[in-house]
Image (cartoon, rainbow, N blue to C red; front, side):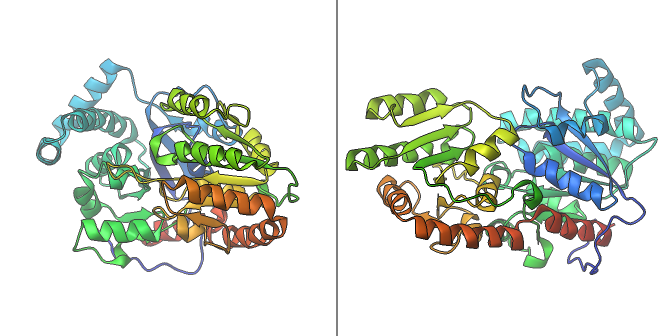
Length: 416
């Protein structure tokens, strides 16, 4: 059920209040504020939005904008009800579901853990289809090309409604086992960067650029007003304590700055599996007096935290397994606020952070280059002032969530 390439009209609205079900892994999710912004922007354009979360709500911190969508969010049934609904839906279209099951088994057999997750996702999708069939949405759109898009694919096949998905990072760099099958059946395929577009074309040689639509994640500029240039020496970063964020290289760069006698402080906000490892690194290098790790903060707290800093640094890396960031939204947020940014030449980041124009870029995994870039900005307020102005303009032009939702709304209409 492919409709590529898609031609879109100049206007952007959800005609007749198009009913769209968004499929996600977990909602609300602290690190996925970009999805919440997209949902609110689409609602403002007249779309009737609901959300289906494959996992029960579990976050201890819920952003205010996400909380406003909870009454339009569905969660899985009880385990017994899931099994009953799955059996009912399977029996109604046995040949279709046997074919889907066969495709999943064949493609996922070499990946036992992913296979089990995909089979569980299939059960959740059939449960969702049973609950939605009385009043189905006009289309389904998933964020992430992994299990959410698998669920959207199965629901779409069972209810005969179009589906699409947006791909980001690990979902195409690592867990892309069913990607070809889902792209073949999707009415709309979206990704968040030109880098991803090229990557997908390399993975699926019969694709052309017109088949993969680029819609950036974005920020609401009204929520990220340009703030005065800070005159302090604070370096900050925000992100999950995961290898792809490269925080170990930021800590090493800070150790180099400390050894040079540079006056600064650095605070990294987040949580995740590498928290203890990062703290051990800080202690081993003897920089605990100037480098600190903080736990997760609310969206408002993060905004203030970044706005008050002299520099925002995110030294993303590509791991040995091939995993890496897409275009981190937190870089967009910092640039919108007017905090100068330092990042790395990884994935789609150079599409946002243009070296020496909207920020400074360093080679990944190069702590010395990172230290040099940070020292340059700390010692040159005029350069910080120039970079931040162009950075704000870049976000306004290409990463405004309202404009990006405008693109997506047109694509929904064109692929209906």
